[in-house]
Image (cartoon, rainbow, N blue to C red; front, side, top):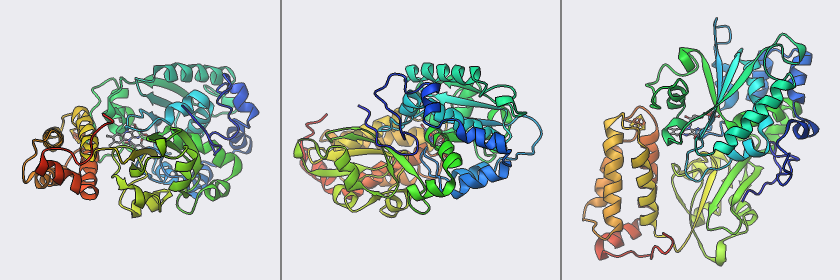
Length: 431
Ligand SMILES: Cc1cc2nc3c(=O)[nH]c(=O)nc-3n(C[C@H](O)[C@H](O)[C@H](O)COP(=O)(O)O)c2cc1C
Ligand code: SF4
């Protein structure tokens, strides 16, 4: 299913070649040159961080927080252990890019994490991999082994006085373990529940030590930035939205898959790359950044470019870059019911507004979808959502509310019709 267009991570990667993930193939593509450049020239840590800042790289895990700025929060001179942690939990519905980075180009991630360790004085790193992609975890272990044997990991890397080791860890597939502090708890062997913040991981992270957590794609973008320069990365995208980005396109398109394209590419171009609408159907709606991102009507999306600022201006989020395309056969009430069930299932139950609220959202949407909706149900959904968003330990509650607000805003007529007529305006043929 994977389809790749060359960008900073997949440049020159022949995904059809069985050994494309191996160290030898990565080296042939210019791999580990960035690390060598840093170590040979003894580039100061602050210069490495400045380069990442200047590249305009924004976190690819969901929030789009500037990566270089996050790295600068790490107290490098703090005595004792410090860690870098990679988030390959990839549980956001619609997202399937990080597993393909590991499958086809794991050394880009390993090199990015070693550079991060160097820049932030961390002596160890961990990659937390989603439990349901076990083969990716096994492959990553093999890639780590290759790196260790080549002297790229461990003590005195490439004969210098810099030492750093990296370990893989697999979870069991709970969505909440993608939230960074739940991930840390799980990595420590505890129940994966988010921590209260502050303190943030930069001061109290893994085992209570300073820790920087980034998404797989964020780390894997770093070798290009260091090797080819921040400016080249920035110019591959647009101002404040540096680089290329992987978009996992799914739904009613002819060629679902991962597309690595410059940030700022028109959505219409991405849709065309994905083969256009399946069976020539009409585009109805798009979730542009994973299930937590507010849905947008198709005609709005057709005017937008795929970057953080443009999507956010239109009232949604680029999020993880998971683009879910829906045609006009989709009953938006049923679609929302599916999403609401997911959040209800995945709430860790720690906070009352989320534990109870996700259940209420699901129950009310479920009854509307089944022709048992009542007058006042849309207002009830709004009121439950208002009592959840921003009132919990982590952002899962907000993630559950955003789809409800956006579906009932943009496709309100379908909800009203179902409540009034007890049958859907659009047959839900697809579910
Ligand atoms: C409920 C929830 C699930 C999340 N799942 C993921 C995930 O699967 N992968 C990920 O990288 N970030 C996920 N995040 C965001 C992380 O908490 C964190 O912001 C991110 O890993 C930071 O990396 P970045 O700055 O490189 O984007 C999730 C956040 C929440 C609230
Ligand atoms: S918001 Fe939900 S998922 Fe997050 S900590 Fe609270 S109960 Fe758990």
